[in-house]
Image (cartoon, rainbow, N blue to C red; front, side, top):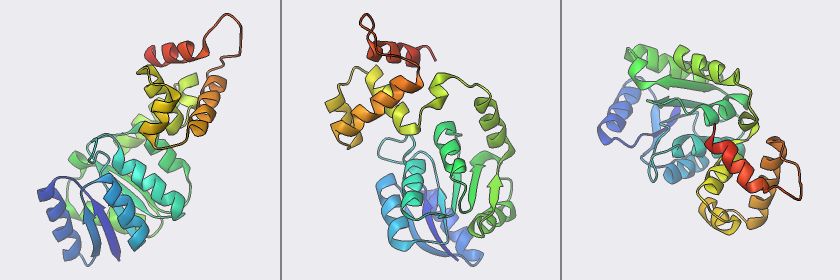
Length: 214
């Protein structure tokens, strides 16, 4: 069973490699950043990916973003997230996919190697392995149905950059997309936040205010 592993802490990464190899897994690649993770997943097409959420270069959500992009390119790619954090927005998108094995474990709640190895095997086989704390947080957030919760992860990124005062051109450069794509995302944001076109309001300002008051 071939594994691609993403973990930025060298000692933990080497420990996970040793643990998995001891239990019969083959490590196709072990990387420490988001771009390398995406390349490794696309190149190796492993049986399962074990992914940390916060990876270089920005230490925010590169691991999950790389996993999501890889699943778009390789539908059904099994992904087990192993992290200290519950990144609710992207976790919901990962779970909503509905294809292939999915797992999300919190590092400080994995109590023994057998539990972890079983989770990796289960996800690789197309099953799920969810930490109860992750499920609890996702369920709690899903009950708060606000206009902002309707936004996709990408639309939320665009709105966050809008709140920083970025122009559409600057947002496009930051996200490495076209201005046309940013314009489309912005229109979707206005629609989902119920901000109609009027002569006496600035929808961009109102959208930013909604984001800041969340």
